[in-house]
Length: 349
Image 1 (spheres, rainbow, N blue to C red):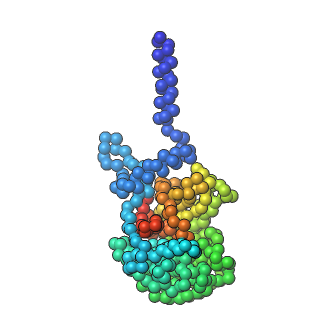
Image 2 (image 1 turned 180 degrees about the horizontal axis):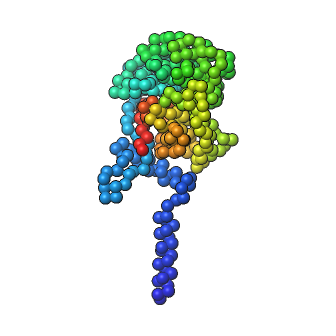
Image 3 (image 1 turned 120 degrees about the horizontal axis):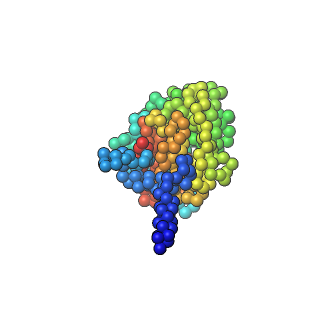
C-alpha cells in the first residue's frame, strides 16, 4: 500500500511540474498567453504597474487602449465620408497621420477634404489640393505632405492651416505611381516609398523640388531620426525582416528577424516614436480578422509587448490605418458600417 501511495504522489508531482514549470526563455509558444493578457489590459488603461501589494509584483508590459472617439459617416463637420454603392469599389478614409502637437489628420477622400482632429477631440476641416489623396505624412516643422498616386500623380506640401505651399509631379525615379506605398517626411524632406522599399525624394519640407539623388533605405519614422524597412522573408513565411537606420545620411543600427506563429499575410504598421518605441503590425493568414501589433525597443528591436486589435470588417482600400504619435503610442482608425472609431494606444513598460 505504501509503495502504491508513493507512486501516486510522484505522478501528481510530475503533473504539477509539467503545468507550473516556467517556459524556456525566448520560446515562441509564450506569445498566445502574452497576447491574451494584453487583450485584458486593453480594457483597463490603468493597468501598468501593480500597487504595493504583499508580493510587490509588477504587471507584465502591455499595450493599452487609452482613448476612443466615435466618428459618424457623414459630410458634416465632425464626420467622415464613406461611399458603398452597388457598382464600384467602396470608398472611405484613405490614411491617417499624427502631427507634432498630438493631433491626427485623416484623409477624407469621399468628401474631398482633410479632417484634423486635435488631442481634445475638436475637428477642423481643411481643403485638399489634390484630386484623390491616398496618403499623408506630417512635416517636422508643421504642415503635411499629401500623395495622389492615381489621378494627379503628384505630391502636395501644405502648411498647418491646409494652405498649399507647392504641388510637384512624381519623379521618374519613383517608377509606376500605382505601386507607390506611401508618402513620408523628415528633416531631409518629403519622399515617396517605392513598393515597400527605398524612399525616393520629391520635395524639401518647404516645398522646393528635391535633388534627384539621395534615396533613403526605407521610410522615415515619426521620431524624426529613424529610417525603417520591413519585409516578409520568402513569403509565405512566419519570418519578418526588420532593419533600422538612423540619421541623415543614415547609418545602420540593427537588422533582425521577428518570428510569428503562422504565415504573415501583410505588414500593416511600421513606425517609431521619440519615446524609444518601434511598432510593427502584421496580419496572419490564420487570423485575418485581427492585427497583431508588437511594441519593440527602437535601440535593439527587442520585443516589449504585443496586442491583438480587431481588423475592420469593411472591404475599403486603406493606405494607412495606423500612425505613431511622436511622443509615444499610436492611433488606429477602426471602421465599421456604422461609423469610424479613432483609437489611441500606449505601450506601458
